[in-house]
Image 1 (cartoon, rainbow, N blue to C red):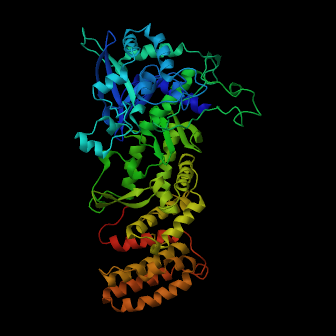
Image 2 (image 1 turned 60 degrees about the vertical axis):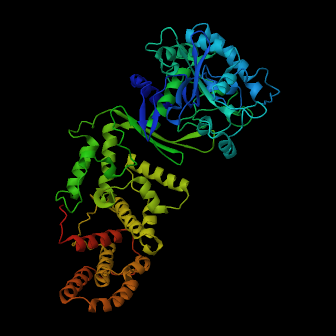
Image 3 (image 1 turned 30 degrees about the vertical axis):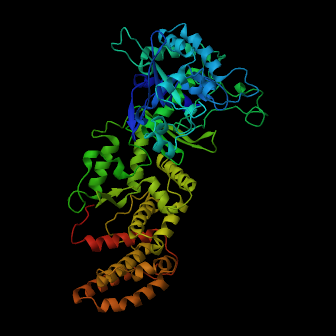
Amino acid sequence: MTWISDLYETYEENKDQVGEIFIRNNQKFSLLPIGHIYRKVQIEVTVTQDGEFFSARVLGRDEALTMIPVTEKSANKSNNLAPNILHDELKYVAKDFETYVDTKKKKDEEETANQLYISQLAEYATENRRMNAVYNYLKQGTLIGDLVKNKILFLDENDKLLPKWTKELTEEKGFKPEIFDVISGTQDSAMVRFTVHDTKNSINELPIWEDQSMTDFYIEQIKKGDFKKEIDYVTGETMPVASYHNKGLRYGGDGAKIISANDSTNFTYRGRFVEKDDVATVGYEVSQKAHNALKWLIMKQGITQSGRVYLVWGKALPEKLTPVASSNELLDDDDEEEDFFEVKDRTREAYAKRLRGSIYGRKNELAIDAKVNILILDSAGKGRLGILYYNSTNQKDYLERIEKWHRQSSWRHTYFVNKQRRFSFGAPNLFSIAKAALGERTNEKLIQNTVTLLFTCVVEEKKVPFDITQNLFHRASNPQSFEQHEDWLKTIEIACSMANNYYFKDKGGCSVSLNKESNERNYLFGRLLAVSHILEQEVLNEQKRSTNAERYMNAFSTHPVKTWLIIRKNLQPYISRLSPPSKIRYNKLFDEIMNQFDETTYTDKALDGRYLLGYYSQEYDIFHKSTYEEAE
C-alpha cells in the first residue's frame, strides 16, 4: 500500500493547507478536513438563534460549491438512504417534503429520509447551539412552505413543487425564477445549506460552513461513530477502520473508487476470503486523509484527459515539472524570448541551458534527495478506479531523467504566440506526440494508452517504442493525407524528435544543423529530397501546389532509388527555368550529396525515420543559411 501511505504522509505534511482555497482552471478547491466533501448547493437558509426562519436565497453558480460534513455512509450513498450531518437535499431536510412532492416509499425502508435526518440531527443538536437552532427550526416542518412564501421555490396548480419552468410560464409571469437557472433536475432535488444568524449579536458572525469551530465539532462527532477497531495496514496501529472509502477523486460527480469491496455475491473477494476485511483494513482517518490528499493534488496539479489522470508530486517539486510537458512549457515565464531569428542567442545550446535552469532551479537548488511520487489513474467502469502506474523515486534522479528526455528528444519545433510564429528547441508535449503518431481522429483511449507508454519512457529513462516512431515516420511521409500544411510540418518536427530519441539516444542526439560529413544513407536520401523540394518551390514561387518531392514522398520512403530517378527526371523543366547562379548552386548540391553515397548505401532498400532528419536539416540549412547560422 505504498501509494496510500505516501498520500497519507502528504496530507500530514500539508496540514496547514487544510481549508485554504486554491483556484485552478477557474475552479475553487481546498485540501479537505476528514469527514467533509464538496457539494454544489442551490439554496441557502438562515435561521435565528431561537430556531425561527430568518431568510433564504438562491445561490449563484460561482458560490454554490460548499464544504459540507458527511458521515461515512452519507459520503458514499447512491440509492440507499443516508443523511448528511447538516446540509443535505430537500427530501432529507424538509419535514413537509411529502406534502409538496408525490413520493413512493420503498418496501424495505422503515423510515423516510427526513425521519433519519432529524433523528441523527437531534443527537448533534444536544451538544452544539448552532446545530440546535437549525434542529429547532426544521422539526417544525415548514421549510418548503417558507421557501415557497419567500419565492425561492414554486408550486403548480395542484400545490405541488413545479417540475420545470417553461417558456409559456415566462411569457405569462414575465420572469424566470432563479432556482431554475441553477438546478440540473427538478426543484425537489435542490441541495440546501444552513447557517444561523444571531439577532442579538451578529458581529464577526461566520457562516456555519466557514466556521472552523464547527468543522472541529463535526470531526470529533464523526470520530465517535460506530467503527470497528482493527489493525490499520498503513500505519500498523490499531484504530477505527473504514468500511467505505472516498469517491469523487477526479471530479465532483466521479463515482469510481480505488478501494471498494461491495460485491459479496460475486467475485470481488469470494473464493479467496470470507469477508472483505480479511483482505486488508485501512483506518478511517488514514483513508480520509489519503483520499483527500489525492483529490487535492489532482485538482491542484494533475493532468486529466478523458478520465485518465497523470500526477507527479513531491514536497519540493514545482508543479510544472511533469513528464507530460514539452520543453517549451517547462521554461520559466521570464525565459520567453522573441523570435529565434531575431534573438541571436536563441540557439540549441542556449535553449538547453535555460531549460536546465528551469528544471533544476537557477542555482541547482531543486536537485535534492527528496521523494517524488508518480501516479497514473483511470477507470475501467463507473465504479472502479485503477492505478495504472505508481512509482516513487529520488527528486534528483527524477529531474535528471526529465532533463535527459528533453535533451535526447530535442528538435526544433514551431509554435505560435498571438498568431505569431515562434521556434524553440526541445521535446514536444506527450499528447502532441501521441496525436501525431495516431492521428487527431483516433480513439481517445488509444491516444491515452500511447501517452501512458511515453510517460513511462520519460520517468524510467527508456527508449521510445519502435511502433510509435514507425507510426510517426509513415504519417510524416504522407503529406497528402493532411488537410492543413501546418499539421504536416508539425508532424515532421515531432517525428524528428522521436527519431532522435530512438536512433541517437546514447550518441548525444542529432543536431538540427546540417551534418555535411554524414554518410548515413537515410540521412543522405532525406537531403536529396529536401533539395528537390526547395528547388521546385523556388520556381513555383507563390503558387500553392504540391512539389514532386511532396507527391512522391511516401513512395520515396519505400523505394528511394527508383523514386529518386522519377523525381530527378521531373525536375528538369524546373531546373531549366532557374537563374544561372541558382542552377549552379542546386546542381552542386546534388553532386555533393550523391558523391557521399557508395555502392553499399545507394540501394533501393526502404528508408527509416532518419531520412526525415536529413530532410529537415537540409531544408533548414538552405532556408536559413543566409539569415542565421545555428551555433553548436
